[in-house]
Amino acid sequence: MEFIFATHNLHKSEEVSAILGPDYHIKNLREIGCPEIPETADTLQGNALQKAQYVFDHYHVNCFADDTGLEVEALDGRPGVYSARYAGEGCSYQDNVLKMLEEMRGVTNRKACFRTVIALIMDGKRYFFEGRVEGKILTEQHGVDGFGYDPIFKPLGFRQTFAEMSSSAKNAISHRGRAMQQLKEFLDEINSSR
Ligand code: IMP
Image (cartoon, rainbow, N blue to C red; front, side, top):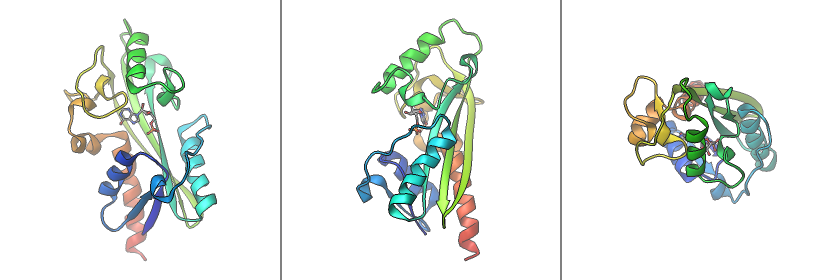
């Protein structure tokens, strides 16, 4: 089965190809020369669907897209859908991490969760999958691997932050890994009945 994954991020498309395995051929937006797709919705589901719908409308193929947010309990779920630009338009991962450490300074409730929503458009129909991982925001950075908020996010039940884990250990429990796993189970089911 062939799909377009609506991302320019090579790291993500390699990750999803590894999770889906050899039965699925995944092309990313770079490979098809698609420009950056706007993400203007105010929910993860809305943004994921916006990207998948754009690809479907322009290329008329089966496709899927994801969107992720970090939801911090003490911040009433912020930055959520705005996680990429929490510290402002065009900010770096490090800007976001520093802003989070600052905003959470002295806050005792450090519970947070990462949530990923995947929108799949297959044979013209829409499907959604969600993965989440609970954890907490640390008071300082630990580890150098990964990206985004990884150095300050410690998943519940683990001693390391995401930035201290190998990518395979992170993928096994992460929000995106779990959402992708659900997508795989759904596609495997269809694949086996064809
Ligand atoms: P996206 O929807 O995957 O582009 O994610 C939006 C933002 O959430 C990213 O720019 C990162 O700041 C953050 N983010 C997403 N996934 C992760 C992750 O696995 N670890 C740390 N931060 C993440």
